[in-house]
Image 1: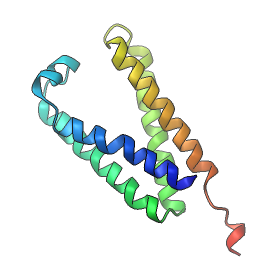
Image 2: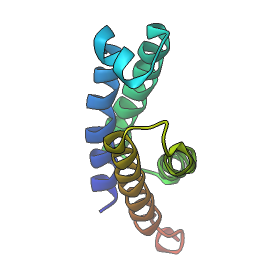
Image 3: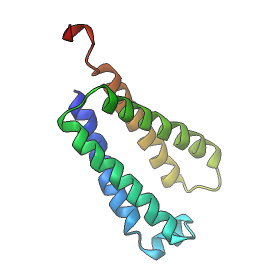
Image 4: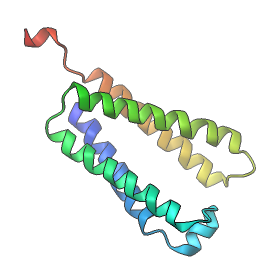
Length: 123
């Protein structure tokens, strides 16, 4: 179950990072990203986080699980208020996709918490 959380996270972040990194200028103007280098930098960071999740999925330990859960909960804490307060500024599909991604990340964070190996089993 724990490796599934890592792999699903990677399956979410790697394509998103690649899309942001190679974002076409007409799509950037459509979603309101004015400096294109900002989207490219965000894409590189998201791609790197996805690659880390792939690597961490091969040998998960408590530190990597903490990074998975912490990163997901921080993203949920950033996306949900922006989607809820965005109201008229965000298009309905963008707002819905932000809420869906937040829900998926919250579920994966809970899977990571539930899949954490206990210390008592290693004594």
